[in-house]
Figure 1 (cartoon, one colour):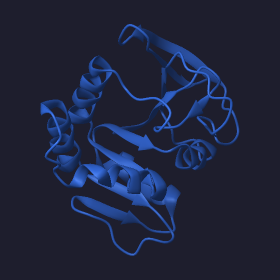
Figure 2: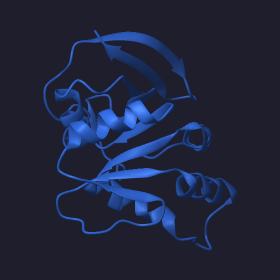
Figure 3: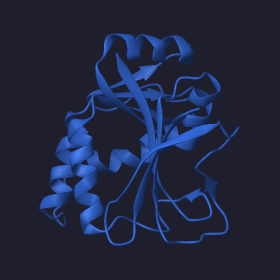
Figure 4: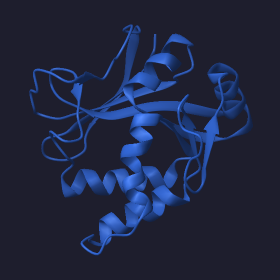
Length: 176
């Protein structure tokens, strides 16, 4: 049975914003290896559109960016959207029955499936379907933006913490 894992970079004050802070080379390498191990990813529309950046090769990419793009392209993706009519390669649209689709996905797959995007994570949290939350805590204070927990704050229990690079801690929580 697959596990749904919501993980994102987060500021010290609880916000996620890929334009405000990015991963160091060490953290980026960690993300490459993480994507290579995942059984797939579930995206909300906005996050999927951001990640479509990795669909096309770019001449300025270094070896790590090329490796991330290959891993991302090879990974199955499920996109939750009411507005998209089609999605790119190796991706499927999830219909109106989010709960049924995610329960089926968890039952039919093995391994970890990443959940990408705080709005989607809120919906899956409300349904009790997120198995683990991973916060990559950066020493940045934004003071605004999209919060990691976009809705209700679930009761959580810390199960692991580790330093990924000089400045970033990964905190892993499960529902309490």
